[in-house]
Length: 286
Image (cartoon, rainbow, N blue to C red; front, side, top):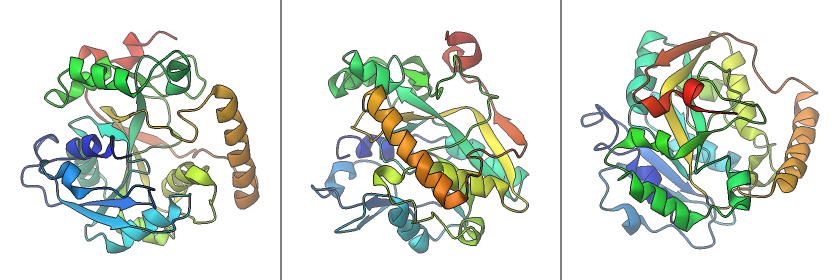
């Protein structure tokens, strides 16, 4: 993800995230055995506190990479981003930390969006590509106005006809929880060993939401936008996605004894609607 990661880090930077100028935080980037190792020089111009870890001969699942990062993390709060190709909106830190101040046991999820005119399985089939994505980001002068991502993105619907901020989420590619909770859960379950992790991300979110004392919080008006990069389920044909998802479901059923994938715990909502285009409950037509 050499193309995508500098942008991801830009969206995590002190100059981009609101009220982050004096925030004490660190970013741990795990290069999970990329054929071409990541180059730190590609983000040296970004005001972002990065530690780079490389795992050679890495497993194709990101589970060990997540746990390796958590082991060296020094903060009280963890923000887990399984995919290094996501761009955040500018208020994610501000609102996630506000949720943490409001609820000491908060598990905070940021909603998943795709860059481009549709969910990327469909838009790629219609010609969407990295060059078009570059042009879209240029057209909104990103990163100068981060909330304009809503103008060029599409909410992940998972087969539903429409998207709504109040819909309960079953996964997040930007998930906050206290480090003590992550450790109590045993971290990411490395038994999820399929390429891309299978339902690893869903499993971690569900276990966190269902763990004792957890307060489940979803942010409104903030998003995590997926850049096109050849993802194992997001950037393939719908037939390939369905086949891989079926294998993921079978592994989940075997590991979790046919338990439900989603949590039934109630949700607290925190956030705002920063722009007209962020009102996905009005603007999105199914």
